[in-house]
Length: 313
Image (cartoon, rainbow, N blue to C red):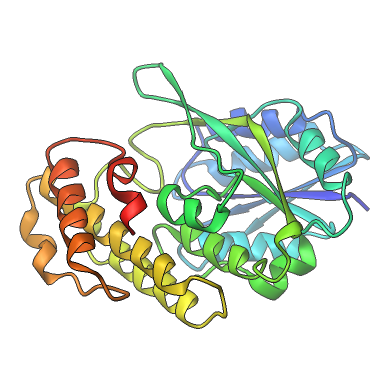
């Protein structure tokens, strides 16, 4: 049995999925299991997957191709998890590229310390103009940093199978930011075991940004979905025994203000006005002022507002 399973949901990626699958096959770690789940593709993706499996499966690289009729990457990932067999899993996206040592590096850290449940890393982003940028990395205050920067995006970690089953699984009701919400639940589960997670301060894969990504390139067209995720995260935090709950909830409120600012930047300020935001935790007068500063700065095109006001939350 393979020690690691890589789970990839796919939707209408006939023209690009083989690049991703080739990067997974190119991993130096073996044995490796790959589970690819087609999520109702209307193009030739299913046939592309079948041909790729036939040409690339080997004794130490087992490939499963499955389907999931329920709409959404979360449902496809859950299906892939149920079909996988390894004690460690990695979820990956169908349009990103693994660097050759990604799995091996992650497992090296995983085996370096008893009791680890997760190992996380960061990634490079290839922008539409071909330039590269690097994702944020959090060595400390991981939950707080995740609330601001979504540190545990889908391919940013490996996780022990039984830990994921206890504290995770994907929320299939969420069609956006499902990895953001899942990351909160996984990290809340580690509050009583802060030594259960370790990080690699280096990028292990590349995100290829394009207009046909699952998240998309605008916010206004999916109004309500983002707010629903933030509501779910606030419920996750309130239902936990995590220390500093109010501070974490104020971070959720900060994300609401930034979302309102992004709507405004796209010319739709009426979708969520700052005065309509109900704080997730009590705010002082100074904190309300700080959040308005973050809103105005972001609405005018600024980036990184948290660096300006985060200390006040």
